[in-house]
Amino acid sequence: MPIQVTHTYDLYQFDELSDRAKEAAREWYRQASCHDEWWDSVYEDAIRMAEILGIEVDYRYHDGRQGRPGWKEPKIWFSGFSCQGDGACWEGRYRYAAGALKKLQDEAPAFYKDEAGVKQPIPGNVELHRIAKALQDVQGRYFYKLEARSTHRGHYNHSGCMSIEVEHTEDRYRDLGDAEDEVKEALRDFADWIYRRLEEEYDWLNSDEQVDESIRCNEYTFDEDGNRAD
Image (cartoon, rainbow, N blue to C red; front, side, top):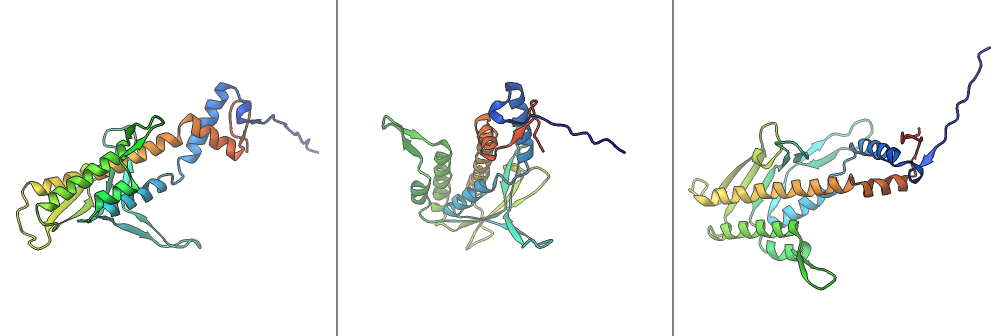
C-alpha cells in the first residue's frame, strides 16, 4: 500500500520576509502584473486631451469570442521603455478645435501652488498647452481651415512612424509651405506626450513603494525565499 507523505511549509506575509526575499516577491509581482492592461487609464486621459486639441483618435473593433462581448480599443500603439525606437504613435484625424487653450487651463492647468503658495509648473500640462498654442497659431494663418490625417507605418511605434497628411479644407492642392511641417510636428509632439505619460505610469506602478502596497492589499503569501505560495 502506498505511503502518503504530507509536506508542510511555513508561509509568510510580505512584511515578514527578509530583504532578499522581498526583492524576489516584488519581481514575481511585476512579472505577474505586466500582462494587465495598465495603460487603459493613460489612454482614457490621452483621448480626452486629444478631443480638446481637435484630435479624433480612431478605434479598432474586436468581435466577441467564447461568450465575451465585442469591444473596441483606440488606435494608439507604444513600446517601451528602454530601447532605441521606443515611443508611441496614434491614428486619427485632426481638425481645429476652438477654445482648446481655455479648456486645457480648466482641465489640465499648467501650474499648481506649493505649500508656500509659489506657482510650480506641471511639465506634462505645460507641454499640452504648448502644443495647443502651436496648432492655434498655425491654424490662424489659414483661417482655421487646416486638417490632417495620421496613420501608422512601419514596424516601430514611435512618433516618427506616423504618416501625416495635411490639407486645406477648401483647397486640397494648396501649397501650405511651413504650415504643413508645423502641424506634423505638433501632432507628433502629442504622440510623444502620450509616451511620456505611459512611461510615468509604468514607473509608478513598478516602483517598490507601489508594488509593496499592492502585495499587502492583495494579502499574498510567500515561502521564506519570496516565492509566491499557490
